[in-house]
Image 1: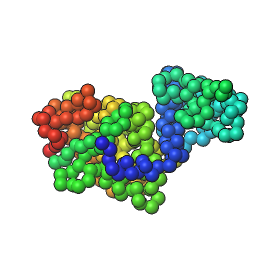
Image 2: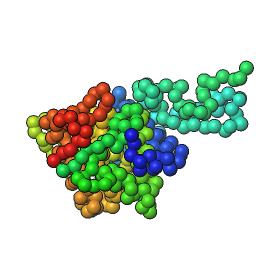
Image 3: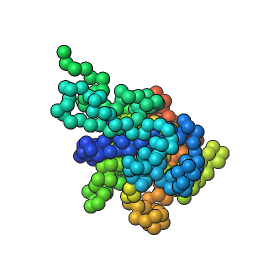
Image 4: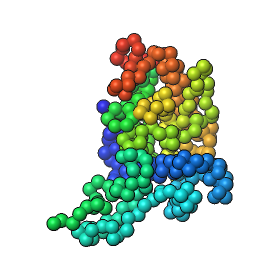
Amino acid sequence: MRSKIAKKILESTSEDELIFVSWYADIVIRIHELLESNGVSQKTLAERMGKTAPEISRWLSGEHNFTLKSLAKLQAELGGTILHIPHKTQFTNAYKSKSTHTVITGINKKRNSDYNEDYYVTEGRPSYSDKLPA
Amino acid sequence: MFVVELWDDECTKTTFYTVRKDGAKMNETDKFLSKFRKKKGFQQSTRTLTAFILKEIGENYGARPEFFNRPEEGSFGLPPKGSVRIGHIRLEYNKFPLRLYAIRIAEREDLVLLFNGGAKESGTNLGSPELHHVMQEAKTFARKFTEALRDGAIEIDEKTRKLKSADGQNEIVIY
């Protein structure tokens, strides 16, 4: 059973909007996981980054919209992958013409634990581990 | 009096409930979505919020605490067993304009009770009178629901991840 209105809204949601919320959720969770695994409090992180605790809190909730710069700073401070961008050479020649590039966070949704390189290719896209056809 | 009713049980990680006021045709969460899905300037935010609830909370992660903001205007106590924490779904990037009030039922990741919401027009809820009113209502719903859960009038069926009325009635009615 699903709310009819929610169903209609979801059906009218574009692919890029779905990708956006997925990235947003991944990043928020990933940053909190790194904080927890490193035993770093928001207050400590704020001190290290020369920011106030409320500023960091807003960063971590994504209120300021994540930028490449803010994510790079967080990744540097937290010492764990937040974004992973596959290199061209990691794709096989069979897919060269498809100009695929995928940017996703270092989260493994299946296990919700450690970063797993195999995850970053979404369903239906060329896989890191795909093999050339015989 | 209000009824606690199922809003979505199709997601793999979380079941969502909502509340419907006595005599109302529509539940509170659907009222919120109906209002904003066609309102100029809010269509995209409504889609984003709906997708976030059903896809990210419902399907991918469950109701992780990171997805719920801190309780607004503090929490209110229900001694002796803790307090009710009313917050909203935490989607705050780039001054996200909508607030949808919700609680994680018994602080679980697989059961969420959604309420009504509104547009945040200023830095505080007091600066958004309509939103403030909705939040006050949500607090009342949350408090009464939590009391019913605490008193055993509502039970959680672990097997089906559903709520049920302890008196065996089909509807969960709270007075």
